[in-house]
Image 1 (cartoon, rainbow, N blue to C red):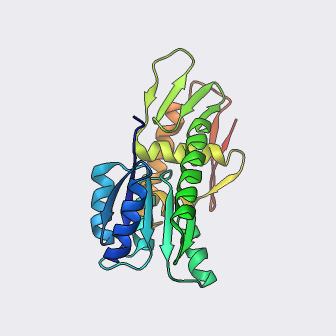
Image 2: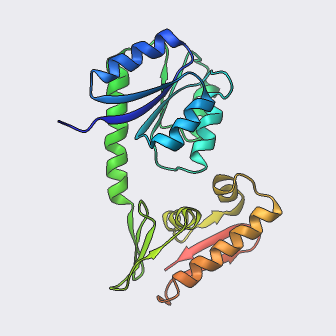
Length: 227
């Protein structure tokens, strides 16, 4: 029997939520239905789903706020927004805070299912691509492991791994300090900036076996990784 795909559905319209849940469950999804954003966030932390389907307008915590909180700790889980809104600015906001897709109500279940599978397939390809080479190091981003030749790998913390990932993805370009602080720390205040400096120092030490690798402080702008 194929493994079921665990999905969190956050929808405050109970009747609609049940219809979506039952339809997905006939297609080998394991659906956790939540009636508000607060419950969905708790279930996200405890259930480790593979994908999130979030209504935008919900009590206690709306879908956009929920997505922002999840993106602060998880860059990779696919997120689809469901909404009755049709304004362009709402669509733009949904994508800008980390949404992967946006489905306007009313929609067909077939369309939702196709979009879910497309995102899951794209995520799987991305995970394969997230084993990155940097100089003589190999960085396994999903597992947060930094390998140097035949030596035992170094286990990075969540924040170290995400910071290094963004540096590598922007290799030879300046990584905007304020942008990455807001993304990983949730604020760009003085104390968060000092914390980021400490993490940069830690990464420099962990990469110091390859002299070609440098993390340069571009004063007033951010950091640049060069190899």
